[in-house]
Image (cartoon, rainbow, N blue to C red; front, side, top):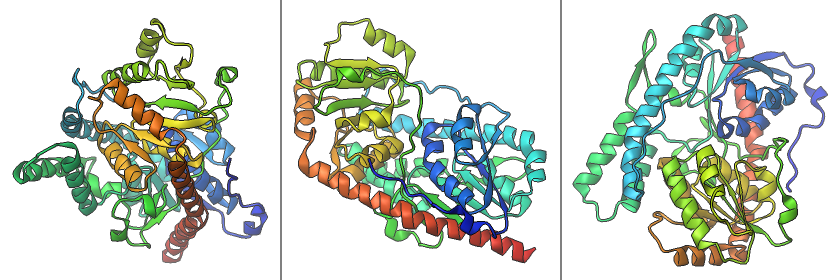
Length: 437
């Protein structure tokens, strides 16, 4: 396991003015955990960080030294209805409407947060506000209070131009034989989603709120960012990622895992019908493979359904697993391509088999293929023998492991120099605000 970078002597910053940073997190593991390292380092440099999240993150946030503040509003959104059949095309076009519904839902949450927390945030008198890109109220609070705002991107950077290029590439790769007229039509349809405006006392463009004019922090190295050469070094800081040991009390039968690396399958919170389809395909394909297979299922009904069937003894199905500990023992990770899981897998040099369902996952799959970190399957309409063949060919493949190790080193280097530059930029904006006052 790689060692984490730490500032060993925080006393060196003791004479520095204490500043107040309000961080608006988005309450989801993949949005909270990547931010913990930069929060910890900001605090080590004598900054007071107040972090808004939900109660389940209180412990891990307070471990960094941050002051935890609880959101007093709910974050639940209506579940998307997914078609019963899976194909790259169905998944792709459906995502257009789901993306719009999700953003409208975030707009409604934003209204509630602004109303509920306005007096509280104003009283905190922050010097700077950092906000997850889905926590768009952070950008609005910063505008209202006239303080610098820093956008925290756990996903790729998508300016309008980059999103235009990316969506065009995704459509062409996933929808076979599409003509230019249809390509332009669907590209325009998708881009219009991000031209939406929300009204919370004032009209705000969603795209403008996703990005900061001061600084955008990205938890990948720039080499993993599509079209990174189109982004300037001043407004975008790529700071890599350090895995955080969640120290959760999750029981797992490690005694059932032998000395050989396992095959690990986890799809996160992908739509249920798609999860069922893929889990069933994997079980059929790997039922007679001479390796331990671990499947992590996050849905109760799917877990119960799979456990009610006959499952070969070498296939272990759990509702939740300690992922970092599992990845240290993994020779192949089958995933839908969530960027947080990809970051963690690369930290342990694990070959990847990506089966993307949604927009950002298609981009992740492209980067995995580009850097030869594994294999991408853009449709699960393949035979079980073909999937088994791909798994056996990718499992513990030396060339892929070496590429993953090289990319992990790039992530780690960005986490050192990139994070320091980002912090200096943040503190520079704080100082600028003080001088202006």
